Image 1 (tube, rainbow, N blue to C red):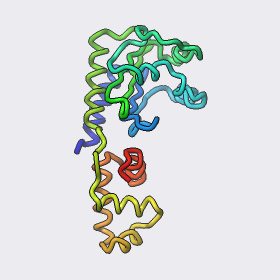
Image 2: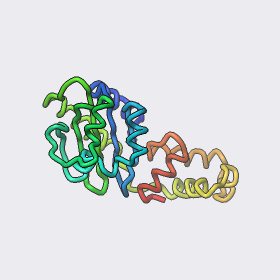
Image 3: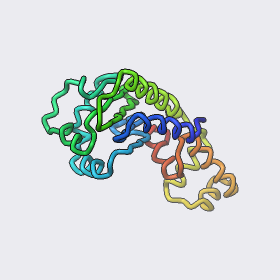
Length: 203
């Protein structure tokens, strides 16, 4: 089981590469990433979200059609909505796009800076970091029956005492099952674990 501290260490390495911010969408399945991390300026995040740019972003399109790492300036994809020009006004002038993993569980990431192009070495470092993050966050293929039962009852709205009673176990035993499910799914909360389990079709 990968520790969250290990993910945070990789994110710190990514932040060193990306003074203007980064975006990482890990294991995109059914159009939604299982985990997302980003450090872009909040004004750009708000603009990007409110305009639904994810559906029209040429860098995202590249990420779904290609596996590898490339500088934005080396990616020749039409941008009819001018998203990249607008991004530059928020300080995202230069970037590296990374995509890895199978199309059914694709990881897509961007690292950006405002002052200069990324070097080949920096591009390759971004690729290595994102590949490691993709591999270490691979969703489990299954949960134990005990974990599934506990998550399903809580997802259905049962409080811990009621869920424990339905399962014929103590409340502390139920909490232990929920804790193990959170750890397996790398979730901070039970609600997050339930969502990740649903996204991974484990519930």
